Amino acid sequence: MQYASATSSSWSVTNLTPVSLAPGQYYLIQEASGGASGQPLAAPDAIGGINLASTAGKIEIVNTTIPLTGACPVNDGIIDLVGYGASANCFEGTGPTAAPGNATSIQRNSNGCVDSHDNATDFVAASPNPHNTASILNRCTAAQLFWAFPVEEWIAWLRLEFKLQVVGALAIL
Image 1 (tube, rainbow, N blue to C red):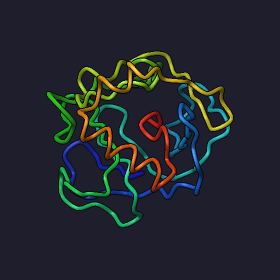
Image 2 (cartoon, helix red, strand yellow):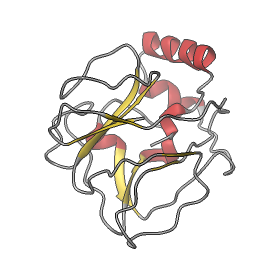
Image 3 (cartoon, rainbow, N blue to C red):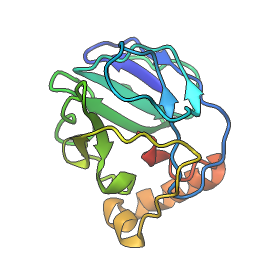
Image 4 (cartoon, rainbow, N blue to C red):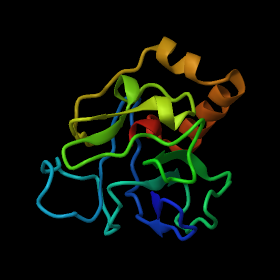
C-alpha cells in the first residue's frame, strides 16, 4: 500500500503481509493514529506507520514495495487508486471521493463490490465499519462485478487474481 498527501509526488510504503484472499474477503491495514478520535480497529492484517491526512490524500494498492514516483504515477503494478478530499490531484474518473472525517470513513459502494473507476461516485462517506481477513465474506454478485469492468479489464483482473492470489483486492479500501 502506498500513500502520498494530496498534491505530493513523494510516496510512503506500507508492506502488506503475504496472503491469499478469497472472493469477498477483506484486508485491514492500520496506519498511524491521529489521536483518540474514531473507533478502535478490529485486529489489523498489516500495520504501518504512515500518518494519512484526514482531509485529502492518495492511496494506491500496488504489487511492489518500491515507492512510486510522481504526483499521479502510471505503473503496471498499480492495482487500485483512491484519491480522497477536494484537493487530491490524482484519482480515478471525474474526481476524488469526499473527505473522511473524525466520525466517518470513505467506503466503496455495495460493500466493496463496485469499481467503475470513478472515485467520485464509487465511494461514500459513512460511519466506520472496519473489516479484516477474519470478517464474514462479502460475496459480490456477478452482476455487480461484470457491469463495472470492460470485458478486457475483467479478463486482466481475473489473470491478476490468479497470478497474485489477491482475489477481492478492490475491497481493501
